[in-house]
Image (cartoon, rainbow, N blue to C red):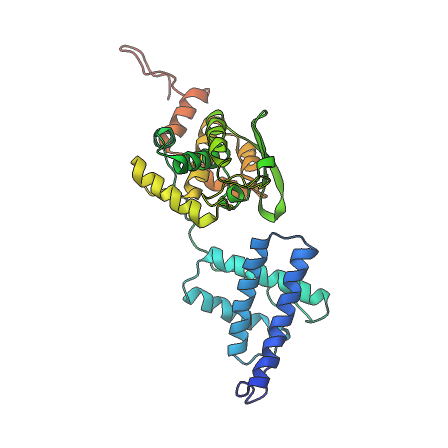
Amino acid sequence: MARVPPGGHSGDGAAAILADVFEGPITQFIQHLASERRQAQQTCRHYERDLRRLAHYLYSRDFAGFAGLINADLRRYVAELSRAGLAGRSIARHLSAIRRFYDYLLREGLVRDNPALDVKAPKSGRRLPGVADVDQMSQLLDAGTEGPLEIRDRAMFEVLYSSGLRLSELVGLDLQALDMATGELRVLGKGSKERIVPVGRKALIAIQDWLGVRTGWVPEGDQALFVSQRGGRLGPRAVQLRLSRWGLHKGADQRLYPHLLRHSFASHLLESSGDLRAVQELLGHADIATTQIYTHLDFQHLARVYDQSHPRARRRPLRDGEQNSGG
């Protein structure tokens, strides 16, 4: 494999040349993703972070560039990521970025093959997100509000639970995305894919209350739906902190975080409807396999559905003197 000549790390000039050998292709690839592929800014940041980690690994082992990487080297890199504590899912995402990067390098004639094609991440157990039960969600969202900040917070949390939004989708909402008359929300999801989701009646009422407060906080013409008291668009970290605070003040029996509300939305909808495809569309999942993580319904619910639906199920307890006809 190609390596830096002996002594290549000793001088600033050699390090600068090597840095450019790695930096140049990464920068060009990220520009390609952003301009030609129109990938979301967050996606580009994730790819750049993962590829820089690979570049640091190669540089520390005297590689002269990306062209020197072979399949065996990449397997050793994966093993190192695993030893560093990365879960299988994180490593799989890492490999996906590398695989796509090398496809680009191949297209540009900068490498001869893609060393990541048959490299797989180690398997790790699937960790199910938390879920709040329906009664707790109702109690938390129906709790009284104290002041304008909590009026805003309730509107945010109602939208998260009512429409199953990702945190990034919530903070990216603009006023024109909301149609109060039809109760619909236009959401820009992963990969800049747009979808229309319904907004529940209570969420619409909470938003209407918030819009009355928002007018006094935001300069005319500003489009962000959820803003801070200073008038700027609210960021993800602020939403996380406010939701955690809401849970503490309103008596939640578990820690609240945005994905808990999204997961509760999906689980409660599935329990009521059983329509996995509809939930997939509402969540904005490209693959239904991703949605199937939300199908871990409790046994009592499954038994109830069975008793109500199966033609051979016992629909009612046997009375005294009745015989069970089953064999």
